[in-house]
Image (cartoon, rainbow, N blue to C red; front, side, top):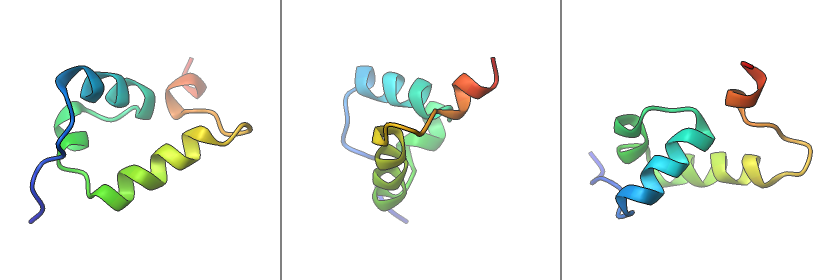
Length: 54
């Protein structure tokens, strides 16, 4: 099992909101999955799922 991500609480909250996942899931998400999701967010045509729910 991988250890929790080494990020600050503020960063965790912001990423959790942007990715639309609970903080608990974010902190234990494998690093390669997190990087993949961040890359998807960085694409200009991609919209986060949280915006689609509105």
